[in-house]
Image (cartoon, rainbow, N blue to C red):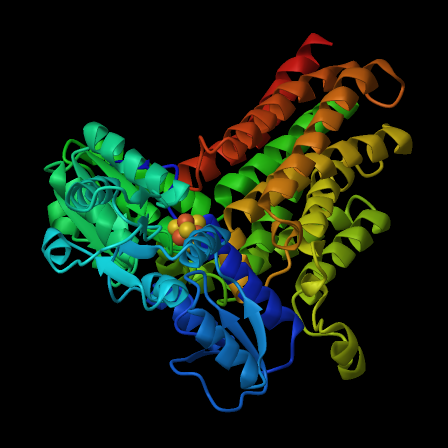
Length: 576
Ligand code: SF4
């Protein structure tokens, strides 16, 4: 099935800011933490926050010792004051755009203006806005509410930030017709405008629309209404389990969008489940090919073959030979370590990919056994290459396993809050890249005629290249990683900064790839490293521009960068 994802689907700026602020407090504070009201309208995120110890306060307690977070919707000023009086440490995560509406109301209240809010009467944001205007305020949700209005002096009209454009324009026009002279402020948030506009356009390209989000989320329901008004079948789902596979199979192209409170990992789960469904016109062969591709990705076979092919290419350009042992060493080590890492821990697997979860339940144990046998096979092969290669392999393998096990003494855990090596911020991405460089460059070429300066230079290039690949995967998983408390680079410095940082690394690699092949450090055939770098730069830029989004297809495209490097180098080595 072809799935088209709306660019603006998922967390808006305000919700993302509130969730990130909450997770940052969870990470840094030992105090009791609560949100005043549910942080967002999404049950899955709320239950995950609860697992991490975040309580939800439904009423303001007399006394509270700990941190209370005000959610993105904001609260009336008297409630904020009462929270301070309770002794709580108040963190205000009200969205800046909601704060702007509150400021408009406050300013006009001073000029004795009456306030009309167009929105849902019981919505938390509207209740918060009313607090700034009371008692001179009325809420209009539908034309019937206008009949109840009694405005005698100057007045303003503002909107709930997630209101539908058309309904705001219609209701505000009716009000100003009945009570001329009112000032109209269209305070619908830009993100809502764009999200709704995109759905309207998406409806022209697809046969059905799936809207992902909490069933109580106002803006999610509104997206579904817009698609329904366009005459398309609409599926409003909270999780992938709600997808109606029987009905969805009748469509060939499906559009996906999500409310402002839907996390990216939930969107990914729905996307991946839809992508795996056969569309109306898909034949048996197409379905088989897609399932095979998924299995190759899930079992890490695709990536390990890429590693083996890279090793083969490096041996070819360093010693002008094709040694099958190079392939086996790199393939065996990478296959085993990736599978041990993927299938021996369950914690974050429940995010992002439900199909991977099923695959793990079915084949995880078998793959772990097979991976152990692979490691033994590689060890035997390396024993013949010399003690140095064998010891290096042993160190890499033990490090790869101990990296995930709690090894720090309790005293250090108290100070640094780190139990395992993998919890050192940003370490995993770098160490996996280092393991790749050693497995594809150093181990297969141990004792070869290539000088150590050449090996080290090549290893550094590969390390940086794989580092960018790994960090891009971290960017795709950033929201799920944040929730489980993983300290990857994008979690630590943010997605935007990570993508810019990776772009600079790729520019650097491109420059090095042009210059170094003409020095004694690298053979001339290494100039063929450049197409792979250019391809990775292309993917990074497209992702940065929002043209690509996380999906199984994108994972495949990213892994293809490794094949491109390997095949280009092999082709190049026969020319030089
Ligand atoms: S929809 Fe707009 S105003 Fe509302 S929280 Fe999100 S960014 Fe802020």
